Image (cartoon, rainbow, N blue to C red; front, top):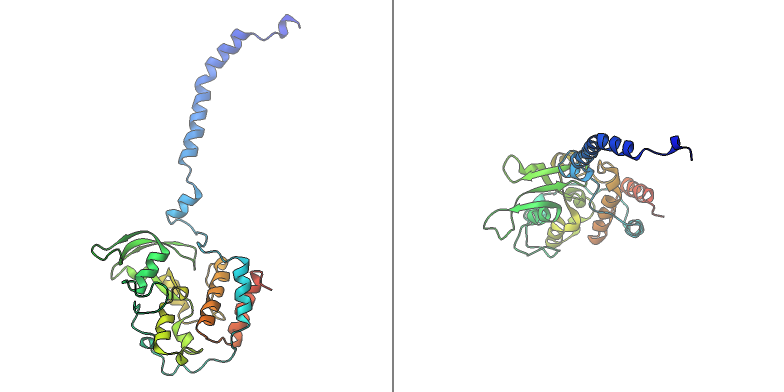
Length: 253
């Protein structure tokens, strides 16, 4: 090898020493940027964007709901005559024969404890009364801070997945009082949700309202079918068609 092609070790070392501060500075910047760049999950936890549903309905559950849908009676609505919320028992009564019933806490607080995270409880309530928490709303995909109070509690409401007045017109008026109370307090039929969204839903069925978050609609309709089967409620033709469309769109056959 010609002498001119032999690397000058001293020159390389000198160059390295000269550039070392810049190399270290560059590495420091990379590390700093990595540390300061928010993780997507952290951003969601801070309430700055949508969040994926926490409940996932698998293919078998979807298929089961689709099969059960075909067993539900299909006919028109009965008159709403005589409907009264009190016919489904006292609001959020604990005196029911469903899951979480008779546990010493009212149903609303039971569902808040089930669906919220980072919960604090009111003192001297045996951890029954939820004072604050965070809701990852399945209907909208947003994160909502909950604080109990006369002006703040309505930010998070408990939705009846199958609305009670809708149920009344589709068979619930034929049930006995205890079974209606069970329906109104059954955790399968209850979901903590964004208050304004719950108000917009009102007593609509699947033919006129579905959750804004499309990825939750499969689970939502499957839950409605489960409740209607459990309490022997019927569906209207448009409701049946809407439910079938959602479930087939989720892969049911």
